[in-house]
Length: 159
View 1 (cartoon, one colour):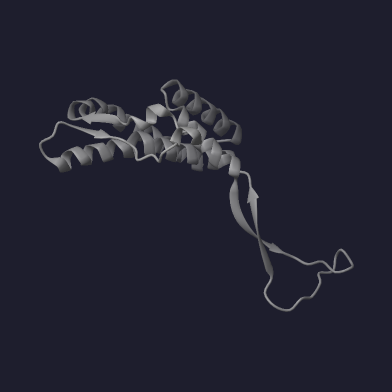
View 2 (cartoon, one colour):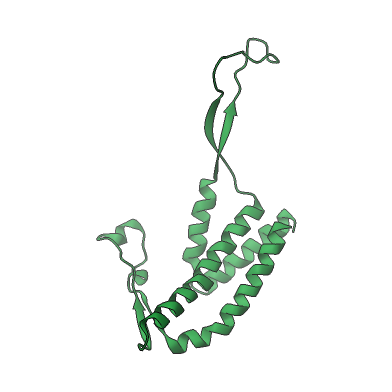
């Protein structure tokens, strides 16, 4: 997959996520991408002549620098976020319901601090959601299909 194809795939996935009410996933991935990737860089000291390094005893100095994500890295990051929201969350719901035995439903709600609205959280997220055995059964086929597509996207993103 070329960088241009990766960029187009990212754009398409972002549009789909936003269309289906998962714009917050797009925002979180964008925030990570905006920060960039931290990496260690060795500092080379120069002497008075540009081609002559300054001899200095001891270990070389290192600095922490930031570089931009490549299109392929950004795509892999977005795929991981989609997997987390679309597949991992399904597995958590399924395990929670199975582990509880007889209940047919369970309510998931986040533990948000007081004043969370002032920190940019969406009020609807504070209400949580309810998971039922019936809703899990309805979503199982879609989750399997999503998983297959993500595996193929991951393969293409690594190529």
